Image 1: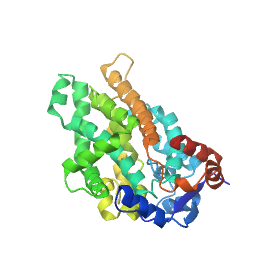
Image 2: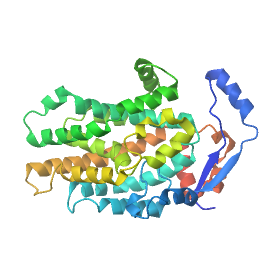
Image 3: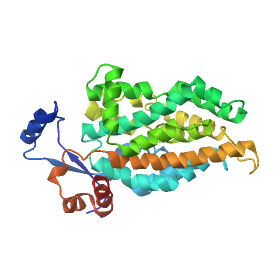
Image 4: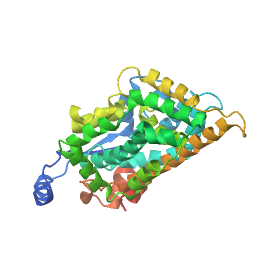
Length: 341
């Protein structure tokens, strides 16, 4: 069977924890109903808005066919200035993007939008890393640490201006408070800490961002954490999350979904090309250009690695590895097996 099969299981998220939750599980799932949809059917919904390849959703939650995602990626890359920073960053992360495409498909097949707990873990990791990024962007101590480096200060100021439109931390917190069922930020931070305790790759990504010492390095982190939503588009991911979490659980997509997507994308690309220019190998600005490019590549690799930290989906106990191969196809099943091993 083709690898372009998307598995969805009928499920209502159980309430409670521990024994209560186990009892709920054992009484709920006999029999398990499996609904199969092709990714092409899912993709056709996304195509209704535009025929332009560059408009295809390429967020971490894309389920477009592989060749279509690659075409969209290349078309989006070309929207940047020739020899500009946006193209350089997109090209730097391209191999990681290719790997992410398989991981992303397997992740969705394995329950990102059929298991609220997996979605909550995924959101928690992104929240923790993004929180470190935004803390540094807003930190006067970090700004002072840049001294009189005009290029670094200019990059920081530009990222801060972008943040005035897109800061995500508080939006993540609203969603996570709902998903964890807590009412205060202190309670939420305890839950986040507990979640990250068994997420070594998530903690590593968080630590790398926390220890960044230049605005150029922060720019690479921002390119991965924000760019996938602003440039890739958050509308489709919001629709899928909305079905599972309700209106109160999709705040994180607030500023990246809805009308004006092409304008948001173009503004981001133009801003990125203005951060630094590849003048010549000896220029100060070239140092920043290269640093942003390398940081983007590193952060995309770290982002991919966090996926292996996620828990098994609730329904996995009903499927053997051969069954996964039969249902979702060989290539994606192998990636799925890697994520769960």
